[in-house]
Length: 514
Figure (cartoon, rainbow, N blue to C red):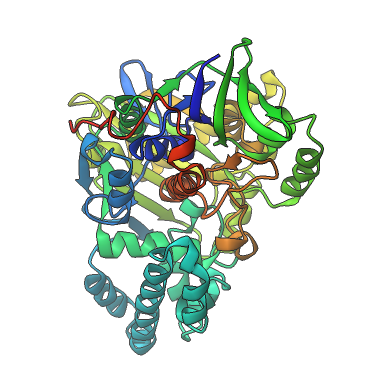
């Protein structure tokens, strides 16, 4: 039976980053993934010669910023090519397309030009954002042993106050109008909740990355990021096993000691990390463990986040030929986020706001010249989609037609250029990730489920950790990777040199640069 220092279940970004970080620290790791690709939501697929990025729209701080530093800690930073976006995003607002500047000062000026009566309040908002950013940096740069001290020093500060607020409360506290707040928070669909429900922590942390560290895409898309992490693991002597579904976490004396695959193979390790949902971990892989059964009840009571419906479109022309020049465009047809959210959650695809991503504009190399690829995204929930195949297939056809009709209204001639139309629904998301409800952000990113209130990495089973979007600090590319890296460092401190597999040392396996 093979023996590792650490076994990771699931090759999503949380699991891959945890394994890559541990590999960089000199631990022998093995990742087991049921799917044919590594990456979870950070993957790609092809149809009729078109390559589609499943999920990546943009990340902040990819080069020398916070995201870049995470990749460096995993020995993956030299394995990707960052592509800086012209704008973090664009908004169609009151019939006009507005490009949001990356530079914070340029953004302030844009807002003052749009809302001249609110200039003083805008200055107060941005001063508050700077204080929030400074507090976040002080908190996140503190070692775990110093967090309590850092918290004490900053307890009265903006950062800790804002972590107890919704995004709407954080913005409107400066006396800004509802119209301003709706415009300023228009990016909320990418975090799964409208601003009156979304934790300010989850809105402003990536916001600061976008406007202080730059917004980026990755050449080759999300799959290139996942592949970089896999390469980092393998080059350090670790292993990534695809088509290898874990069916059981093996226990000995109440401690996690290994995993058993569905096909029967068993593997031992000093530590087990689960990068899949806590529901699946406790409910399927530990079904005979009493404490795990109790914990399953607890994690099931928490609010699950939203899913997505996304239409992937392959065109016989480049998007700019149809007038689509923006990289990420939020089509804001409903200026009330709560109403818009209700439209989405009730499956009204002909109404409400939607997001359009132009992959040609972000990465011209993703597909051959002349082939256009865009994605149209709506927040959604599993309950809007029938479970029976005939009804499900019929609804997919109806919704695809409705979305194409909306695109045709905006961009005449669009329909005649469509070569591929592939609709992913919440049931698609659930099938490929086993996430309850097809959730793409893990738990809903509310104030009650954010920051230190979110599910902890330490599980109820000794030597079993949880990582990924369901756990601290939260969902998204950066949140999921942060969870894996944070827990990798904690595991390394717990295991220490003495418990490393004696056939593997950091000095023996140095990750080569590519």
